[in-house]
Image (cartoon, rainbow, N blue to C red; front, side):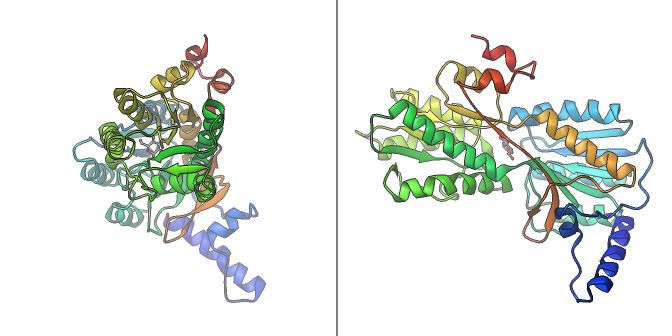
Length: 371
Ligand code: BGC
């Protein structure tokens, strides 16, 4: 939190104590969440200030898209953009160093898509000491009071939508059966989104497991057991191979909850290598190859989180801060230490049935849906 902003907020808190006469002031997050009067960030900063963007390694296409969109969008907004990716072999160390360089170079705002959402404490302290505002992008940095804002799609809802589409797909493709065998995959444990996607999905699936509609034949149903280290496709493929080997001799596999497209394709490869029919597999990110697979009737669903909208929302936050205004937020997100004021966008579920409509305004994806 910028000190100037904090001073303004502390002032409002003091007024709030005086007015209510009770000892507990509203936190800035509460004030923002109520959509009432928001605290004005005092001052702002130069219109051509440096805005740092620290992105993780390119584990999915959305990250690849985000880099160019940030570079162009920040330039169009008049800022001096400094967009960096962590490499894949030492992503955490790379990112820590990149953020430190952005701080030393005098950035006013740093937008962070964390490589590891638990390992940025030192960098957040340094940013705070330099009055830099930190915006967590897509992944919520955990257990720190020094995350000022969060901009993301509603990731719990992503999980709910994935699970509902799994059930819909099972009914559509295997509606003649009374019960279905499924397997569950989650993302990398160092990404706080992984548990959020999984919890959202399990809120829909657990009742169906409990009533016997769904059977997880491997019995691996916790986020730890289902994790995919580094979001790496080969890890998902290996785990699927092992599960088929150990738990599916003589059994059909009807569906798989996959947290994203890259892993969905790896899971489909494993199942096809085993000579099986295509199960219902979910996904996320609307990656080109997965959209093609959905249109062809293989992968069942994906999630559309329009990266253009998310990058635009992050840049809007920086513009508000530049103007000395409080950025628009729609919710708060608990990072274990504090409720972070958040702007959460709506994800969209996409299947073969609505792909053309969902991607109609996306010039890269729309042509893929033309039969
Ligand atoms: C993002 C997903 C992405 C995954 C792997 C998550 O934090 O929200 O869109 O598929 O990381 O890159």
